[in-house]
Image (cartoon, rainbow, N blue to C red; front, side, top):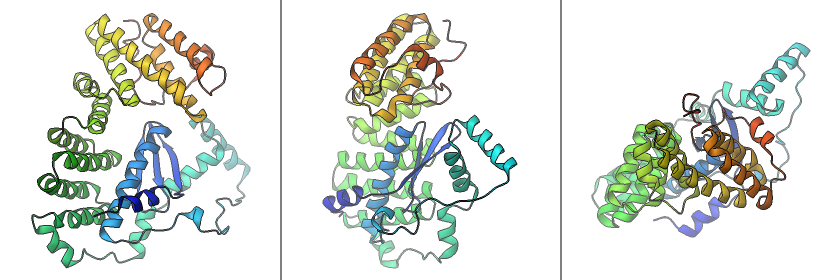
Amino acid sequence: MINADMLDVQLARSWTRELTPDGDVVSARVVELDGCFSEGPTMEIALANLQDALELWLEAAMESGSPIPEPRAEFGSSEYSGRFTVRVAQSLHRELSEAARLEGLSLNQFVSGLLANNGPSSRELATAASNIPDIREDIAADAIAESVNSIGARKGIAGHLRNLGATNLACLVYAFAAELVARNAGAQQAANEYGKAAALARNNGSNALAESLWTESLRLDATNARSASRLGQLLHHQGRYPEAIGLLERVTEDNYATNFLGFSQIQLGLQRHDDDLVETGLSNAETALRRWAYQGSARERPAWLRQIAHLSRVGPRSSTVVDRLIKYANGNSNWGCIDTADVASSDTDEDSGSDAVSEVDRDV
């Protein structure tokens, strides 16, 4: 059984989080922990997903007794400052600068992404450098029994598989562990276990697997707000708006869920030419974006502006909502003055939590 206080201590350590823009998503990883990675449509969501992945990684390591590396920030060494100088030809410097500009990145960010993505991954290097052993026989034997003592063994095996990069198989074994949790600790706790496995699958891009795991979580506990919110967001991105709405309507306490609910209702209302549903969606989106403006940090300003840009594309009916949100942000956020020009210049190609309204729908 995991010591919750020790887990909290590990989670609070100064782990190095690395974010890399990758097309329509932002990839995120904890540099010190091989196999601890995630992604999301924005930096904020990628970091939130990475926090879930970090918790899962640490839980598995603690359960299996695997060593946990030290965060780089705690080394107390300046040997690796993260900074070194490389001289290149002027022509290459120009090409790299132009490519970075087109991606909307600084030259440092762009080159860091190239170095991170083009070489072998840390997982591949670690695998090549060591002969990773099979699981211990006693752990395998413990995992077979249908008892509460088998839960930790199954989760330890799942963590071992995840560290090897076999994430889908790891999620399956986590599900086997959750079955034992359901029989020995109750449906509510098992629903949480299924939800954590689903988050790991989603972070790995295994959307069908994530959907199955979240569905099982909600079958066991229909009140599990985290699973309802995450599954609703996943279905929203797949354009399954009626199903997404049914799930997201359950999660009034989650601002992300309210935002996704609003945009799902807007999209479905536009498809069905249902003005009342569009208005309901606008109201929910406005509620979520007002909260975001009030609570958000300065670095969240660009993501918020992209949401306002998405909202403005609904057409004339959303202009009043957009004006109210800008006025509210100017009086209540920490983002400085915002005007319509800021919204127009925001990058609407980067989705920060909901799909942009299509060109076909704009004039509906």
